[in-house]
Length: 420
Image 1 (cartoon, helix red, strand yellow):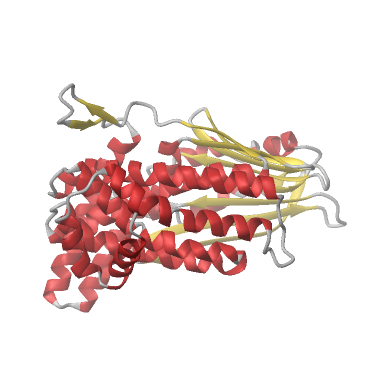
Image 2 (cartoon, rainbow, N blue to C red; image 1 turned 90 degrees about the vertical axis):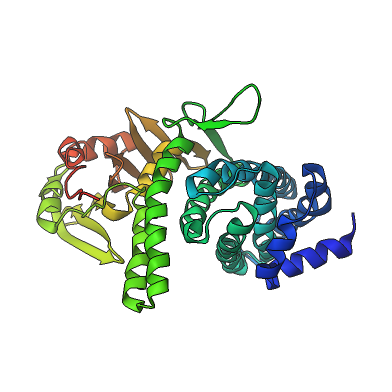
């Protein structure tokens, strides 16, 4: 390994990416060389920094034991090595959708070198209070690096780079979420219950030359999603060429709508008068003390939220009910459903877990020390109903939320859906 070459490459991809990507695309390398000469070293930065931040430099904040910090850092490091390879497979599989050329090595190089910003920003984990700011900056710059690199390495047309980047980022978020759940489970005592993708995402022929994405798998659904994002990306490119600032702004909003909306049809969230019936006047024999419903819109996305507080006038138990229509951002719910993430975390005084039951995603939280909890259900991959507060048990919260017409709310999942 030549450390000077590693530093030079990292510096160039971060400071002069437009000229460095063509150099990268023209290089001949192997998977082993990429890992030995680049990934193994840079991926160690966030792992080592995270270990130091978790175990030594918490500055009075919550600090975990050395052994747990070391285990979490090592597991995170190993998973990051796997993640960058899997991400390369995803970039390669999506290439034809955006007019690119499949090339597994070019895809892996794209994944590796675009991740440089995230690796370097990982140094911020030494200071947990500020680390998230650097992580955010690294993530944003990685998106920019992907946008610049995909047309060069994967040979996709420039006018499709926006859509290609957007879908690649979505998949990256899901993969990163998985890693954070595993590492987070180690540091907090949680247990990753599993991840189920259903049918195989990628099928390789005996020759190994062709890859077919199962349309019923998570990756297959993302591919269908990508077609909508691709169309939105074309509008951005056209608006940029026209020089019309207003049109460009609307087009960017279209990409955001396509990404957060799951690539499907546009959705207008429920108006206030349709949310109100799902905030009953009494709940668990407690009268409603207050209620509010609002619908907000930004860049073509609408989200509606209804809230109600329940409790006796003289004090005692209190409950908070919230009904959310994710509307134009329902793609986030689709992602959660497709990924099938399940997790469970036990603490000294309670637990927290997420699972899927009868096609619905459910999240539970309970604290025995104060007999308070939270129970949430995702309905129709669009609505979220949450009840929180004091109760004799979590089952009591479940029973109380059952008094809300959840089936009626789920039946409205197609309400406000507009044709493309």
